Image 1: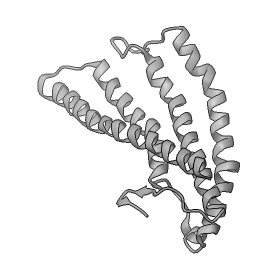
Image 2: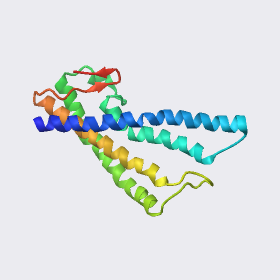
Image 3: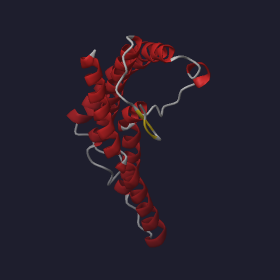
Image 4: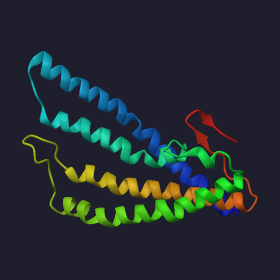
Length: 181
C-alpha cells in the first residue's frame, strides 16, 4: 500500500505543477485580449494572430488544468448524497465513478481525438484565417494533454479510494482553500 500512496503523491505533484504553470495562461489571456481591444479601438489596428492567441491560451488553460482542478476537488459534483456518506462511502463513490464514468469517457475521447491531433501534426496545420496562428497542432495536442492529465488524476483518485477502503490514510489532498489533512 505504500507504493499506492507514493504513486498518488507523484500524480498529485505532476498535476499540481502543471496546474500552477498553466494558471499563468489566464494572465496571458487577459493581457493579450486587452491588447487586442486597445489596438482595435484606440489605434484602429487588428491582428488576427493575436485574437487567436487569446483563444488558444484560454482553451489551453481549461484543457491542461483539468487534472489540477480534479486534484483540488474543484469539479462539479452533486453533493446531495456524497456529503452525507462516511469516508468509506465516499471512497466507493469515487472509485466507481472514476472506473465506470471518467475512465471510459477519457478512453473514448483519447481514441477519437488521436486521429484528429495526429493529422494536424502530419500536415503541419496552420490557422485557416489569413495571418492567423501557425502550428495549430500545438493547440490540438492540448486535447491529448487533457486526457492524459485527467486520467492520471483519475488513477490517483482510484489509489486514494483503495487506501481508504483498506483503512489507510491517503496522502494529504488540497482544496481551493488550502491543504487538507
